[in-house]
Length: 142
Image (cartoon, rainbow, N blue to C red):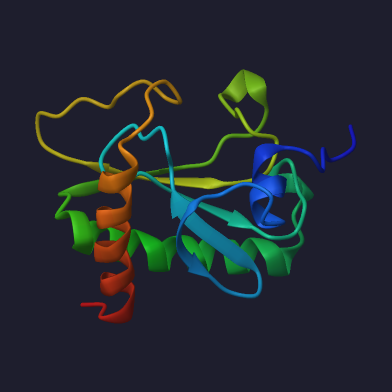
């Protein structure tokens, strides 16, 4: 199957749709999930078009996982989460809802269950405030 250039992440990468941007470099983009499973739920994706991880070049995969690690540290620092769930789905049957490779960084807190994936939109003001904290943590990693 050919890559869908009109998927929501491709449109975000082209600047056609907004996102709560956290980090960007030449190869990757990271932003807050607008329908988070947990406070601080972040998405990291390659700029190169790829539906599945197996479609990625070695260079794109390396850049994406390095950005995921960088964001994981900042998200955990900014949210105070005790743990992180980092996941990546390949194919609808596996739970992939957007046909562009992306990694989920989902903070985990004691006794706080995950919300349903992609169900409820977060408050934009809360996302903006959280983004400021994560961006500050990126600038001052511990």
